[in-house]
Structures are given as structure tokens and as C-alpha cells.
Length: 400
Image (tube, rainbow, N blue to C red; front, top):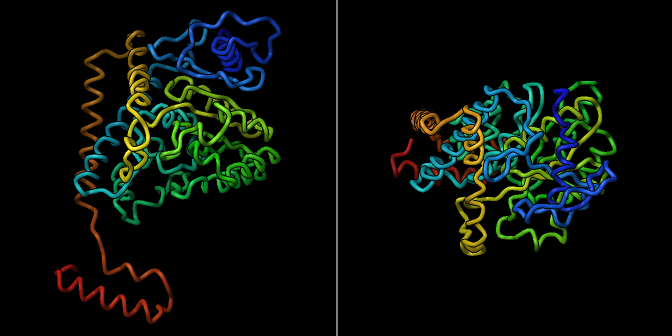
């Protein structure tokens, strides 16, 4: 930690005071008068219990004394990762609409949350993703071609790359959380100075498995970081119909898990919060819950129509909170990025995605005659009959 830089705890306490008008957790003096109500809502949180962190505001500004000590190289690498994630997302949506891709879950608007939560992880750490995590997966070492195969239904795309300590992503809501905690508990027993990051949505926080995982992790002091991606909607169910509290971070406190609420569209805040949580875990201080407040700008999945259950008025304010745009504004102000560089990065990322698409098209080869081969040692008669009928249909269509 840089000696002249405020600690993240001090930063978060100051932010909590500014946005709630309350008293920071470790201070007894009154807070400065709060500014006009902002968009990062903390009104239902006791600032003495839950820290709230925003470093980079919607205008691309960092408050004096809160600027983190990341290097220019780190900042530009993260920027490129966010742009690449969005380019991949947009291309996947186009491919799905053209019939080349199966149903998938777009991640537009959540790039800061995605990249920030895995940025501090080493190759020895583990990541347990949910199904909206491909930006994080690319950062962790998954090729885009592999992810395209996954979402197109090819089994070879599902398994993590051999040198990547990730779980396969989970479709069953919240089911990835208990195994992540179990991995972290094993790390502690082996005296490994590593950690696990597991993410899940606000809807998954209503699953009992997530609550049980928090309790196990707290009791065991497991080195796991829970990242709740609160994007406002559990498919079509808004937060207000899930819970009586405005912040899900307070749930972690009920299990004795240190918890923080972070502006999930602020890449700097996500990097700081996750880095510090990982450092706690590696020191043997146990789990942390990070509630990342963001918004799902696109569809829940490509099988979804959000216009049925939410109004444009819900979406419009978040267009001005774009995590990439605000980061680019700040980088430009520091002389690290200009309009030409932004355009060049965007073009380069789109070129990378197109190359991955072409590689996917050239390598993805369906093998429809294998679908009965890996189910049973002794195939039941009913499946043998179905297999025979299925092969007749393939023969009629000339399918090998």
C-alpha cells in the first residue's frame, strides 16, 4: 500500500458518509454535508455497518485523495479487456440472430463488474463463474473460439482450458457457490495462500444454497470472495419484489462476512474492492462479500424480451453510466488515451473477435451420430430403438 494513499477502508467510509449523510464506521465526528442525491443509492444502508465504494463517478472524475495506485499499463490493459468483452458480446448477439449460436446471456453494461472481479486473481487462484461471465473468462484465459463453441452447444467448448483454474460456468442458479466455498475450505486446510472468487446475481441471492455457503465460509474463515452482481433484475423480477432492503450487502453481515457495496460500473472501485478482499483472504482473514451495483442493459438471455416487463425509463438513466465511457473519460484526462487510441482499440478488438468467429466456423463440426454414445454402458432397448429411427432420418437427409 502506498504510504500517502488513503486505505480502501477510509475511502469507502468517506464515500458512505458523503452519499448517506451518516457517520463513517470508524469515526465519531459528523460527516460533511451530503451532495445532491446521486445515482449510487445507499439510502437503506447503515453506514456504520456497510461500506460503500465509488472511486470513479459517472462524469469520469475521481475525488481528490481517492485515486488508486495502478500503473498506466494496468489501466490500459483493463480498458482493452472491457472493450473486447463488449465487442465479443455484440458479435455473439449477431451470430445468435443469424442462427450460428445458441441461447446466451448478454453482458453489455456489466464489463467493469466482470473484469474488476477477476483482475487481482493469479493463475493459482480459482474462479467459479455464472453464465454471464464471458468477459471474465476471456481475461482468465478462455479463448473466444472456445466460448463460441460452448454457447453453440459443442461439448468441447464447455470444459475450462487445461491451464486455467476455473469451474465450468453454472446454468443452475446459485449452484456454483457451494463448490467454490468447498474449494476455498480445501485451500485453507492445505495452507495455500490462494483464494476463490465466485459470482452470482441478485436473483441467486434468494437461493438457500447461497445463504448456506456464506455461513460455511464465515465459520470456516474460507478464503473466498462472493461477488453479487446486482443488475436490478432476476430475469423479470425487480429487486423490490425480491427483498425489502435496497442493498444485498447487508445479508453478508448477518453471517459474519465482511461486506461492501461497490459501484459496479466503476472499474477502479471494482479493482480496489476485489484486490483488497483477495488480500484479506490470502492473509487467512476469511471471506468477503462484494455487492456490485450495476445494470443489465440488454436481454436476460436471447430467449428474453425485457420490453415486456421493464420500461425504457428504467434503462435510459443507465446509458449515461456506461462503465467503458466513464473510464475512457478519466483515462483521457490523465493523458493515457485519446479519441484516436479509443477508435484503434475498438477496431483491434473487433478484428480479434472476427478472427475468433472465423476459427469457430472452421473448427466447429457437429457429430450427430455420437449423441447416444456416452450415456450408458449397456444401452436400454428403448434408446436402441430411438437411435435406429434417428439414424434413418439422418440417412434420408444425407447427414454423416
